[in-house]
Structures are given as structure tokens and as C-alpha cells.
Picture (cartoon, rainbow, N blue to C red):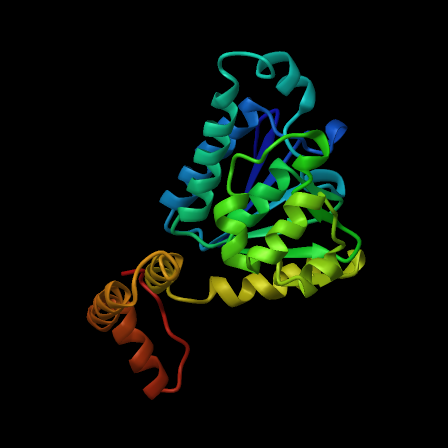
Length: 262
């Protein structure tokens, strides 16, 4: 385990477990935390032995957003106020765009900046009693790392407005019904649910995981003809890849495939 003041990284076989580590303020985000998280995302994505990134917070709290003491002291009312939004957006976009699939594990408060980290992950699994929502409007603030472009693509415009304009918080169960997360479980069953879910990711070809995620991420951002061309290239790449050949042979030979990642 590699430890810094604000973030912990544990490499557990094919799983990178990344922990936000500021429990005294419900793992609130700081500039230092964002910079370290950005470094970790790059490190994980460059490691061919890591197949999935699991993001969560220590002591049963995900993240309550940006540390308001730092926000007030360093950014509110200053000429560099936009800087914190730019940095947050860059880190969240790196998380969203990384080749390695990511899973957010939600406990306690998942609000504001924590909410933005969650919607930047590919998947999210929550404790039934988690408290999940954008929340910015309750403090007359605006989220700068994804709600207006990631959230409508996930849950539609009306539900996005419901969360952003009311500042309401959803439980884990409600968030699942809202199509905001993939699954929820009682707190004492959360780890079991997470391990079962990530097991469906770590046994797949990392080459095809990268290719499929890249293609799906563009699925709502281009016209049909352009997407068809991208799809043709994806099919061609898969059929020419070593993993594609191995997947077909393993099926025909009735054995488990041995991926090489290319």
C-alpha cells in the first residue's frame, strides 16, 4: 500500500483500490488531493497488470465535496476562483476517459465534488443508506466537473434538473431506481456486492475492455454514420487482435481464455 496524506493506493492483484483519506471532513476534496488522485489515475492506467480501479472513501464515507474551508480561504472572491473548477474538471475527465474501467463504491455522503467523482466513474455501487446528490445549489454554488454534460447522458434531462435544481439527496436504493448507479446493497453486504461486480470486469480481455469503453463513451456524441465507421474499425481491430483470436479458440476448445492484452 502506498500512502499520502490524502489518498491511499492499494494494488490487490488486478484491482487498484484507491481510497480518499480525509475522514475528519468526510473525505472532502482539496487541491492536493486532486493532484495526487490525478497521479494515481495515470499510474493505474499505465500498469498492464491492473484491470479495474475501485474508488471509495475511508471510514465508510465516500466524499462530501470540496473542502469549504479551503474553498473560502483560497478561491471564493478571488481572481483565481475558476482554477478550482478547471482542475476538478481535468481530474474527473481523466478518470472518465482512462482505459481502465472504474467503479465508485458509495457510502455516507456522496455530494458536490464527491458526486462529480462518482458520475465520472464507469460504474457505481452504493450502500442502501448512502446519501447521494449534486447538492451544489443548496450553497448557491455550481458544480464544475461534469453534472451538466455527464448527468443528462446517464439519467436524462428531467431527472438531471430534479437533482441539480432541488439539491435533493437520494439513498442508495433510490439512486438505483433513478438509474444513477448500477446496484445497491445493505451496508454489511456492500463489499460482497462490489467484489462480485468487479469480478465481471477483471476476467475480460484488457485490450477489448479499452476498445469497447472508448467506443461506448462516444456513442452519444457523434452522428450515426460516424459511429458506424468507428464501429467498423472496432470490429476490424478486435478480429485482428491476439485476444480476439484467443477468445474464439478458447470457446471452440472449451477452455478458459488466456488474455495477452493486445
